[in-house]
Length: 523
Image 1: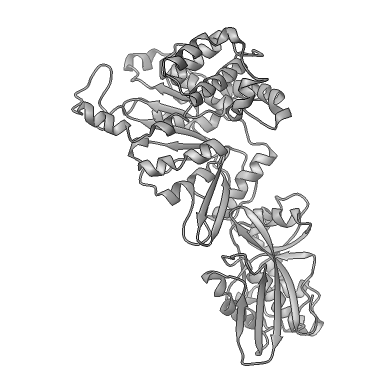
Image 2: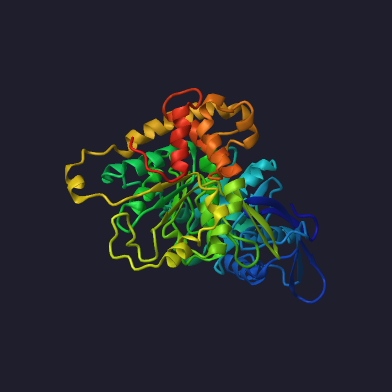
């Protein structure tokens, strides 16, 4: 609301997925004509001064020629991007009485020089933060309207042009008469114009019915999906590692409302295009082995952006040819593998992104890829093989629950093998196992066996002592670390859930140990 030469409006600034309410104050005073922007704006936000002056002039409500001082509070919070443009112009126009910015409305959007309101990334988490702070009304770009409406409890209005915002604010009739809609778009035409095309969720076309053979690997990935366990696939080129890994999301249950909101918020901040509906299919993210640290775990200049690990939240992060990634880049995944989130620190601030994904690593047996039990002209020396697989550090592999061999499948078997199960059939078993886990773990705030902390594995979720002899022996011989011991027990719980047992049996833990130690199992 305006008060004399002082106007106010409210916007939102994002740090990672965390939204901060920003109070925008605009003061019109004496002195030389200028537009001063205070409150730690970055370069793109600092350029808002020229965007706003041009947009207001081309709308027919030019800003005052006097000195305009705009303060963004809290002043100590770094602010980036152009999403505060609309709040700034609303405060400035409110200061000279042109419009009346509403106290209960949050303004989000970028301005073009012609007054058009352009879409911005991060509208979903911004509106969600506003609702959590008690706001209910939001003014957003028309192209972000469907995205903003995904938040329950938000009353959202979408605008194409600054003139629409001024007219809707209760501006004086003489002001409304002088408004101009740029590019020949009238208010009536703008209201009838269809929304811009939206990106939709990628429909899954791959299916496990495409994979013949590899029963051991299929079983391992079913266990992985049921308990959200991490997997390492080893085998020579062409054995089917990539084919198996890329189909893992097709056997994962659809995301529930809370999970879908988390995943969609990450993709909203990424800002490739506005989203139009909640993402229900668990995502598959497969970065190239030349990916940098920032590309994989997040970062960049200024306030960090989400990386591949966060885009794979509640889904699958698949690293094909894993030993080709740089060691430091791979080891940066150790934090999210333990905590389920990624915190990136930069000079301009720290940002925390969710990163609870299933990691799937695929690797050849040697640099040339021709090393196999039968031998096929592999010329790699033992030293070269050790160096190749040694790029995957011990601490990283210790956090991978399942390690499975993916051997070649004989052409004669491919021709005579029975039709394999489809993804839908496997997903039904996975969903049933997830339901058992939910009933068992909901009282402690967990969802899957892969998240069970060690204290529970020693307490109320400890398996019967009679089922532990082989596991204890493997630990005494040094084949398992303490972390590996716990991960085998988590695997045992998942296998018991798939077998519809209330507690892991000796057989369940034996199978879990084989999966952990890279021994093939014949179902």
